[in-house]
Length: 197
Image (cartoon, rainbow, N blue to C red; front, side, top):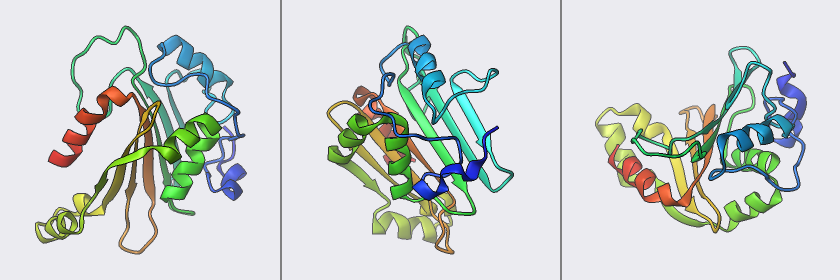
């Protein structure tokens, strides 16, 4: 297991050695075998011999990272034939030492996928941002602390759709967050599910 502190200075953290890759070679839309080969070659997410499409790294209870490539679209599971095609890739960070914010998620995205996908993310159109002030006030008033704590955004790029989400803490340090890269054809499904939860 690699030390988690290795790349904290990059603002990415969780010491799986994230070197900047020039361009992503496996992404949602490709076959699971191809994605697994890419994961094995990617210094940022290289699986151990016992790991396949889900990678977990920990540095005690205070820092954790999970990367998962899935044949399912984000959100609720629906039955569909994928033919082994990866529909989404999710990176989840939990860090009580350094926190997790939008900039850190974006830096992690760039580290794993390279400049091409990072540019697609940066220039992507923001489709939905939550919570609104009214949604947050309602969640607090109706004693729904999880709904009040979640802050997220959906984007549609030229190549992919992106979902970032931070779990906010009342003390001002956000300990957890995720970034999901997924097929743009699943964007309306994901948006509808987020709006209805």
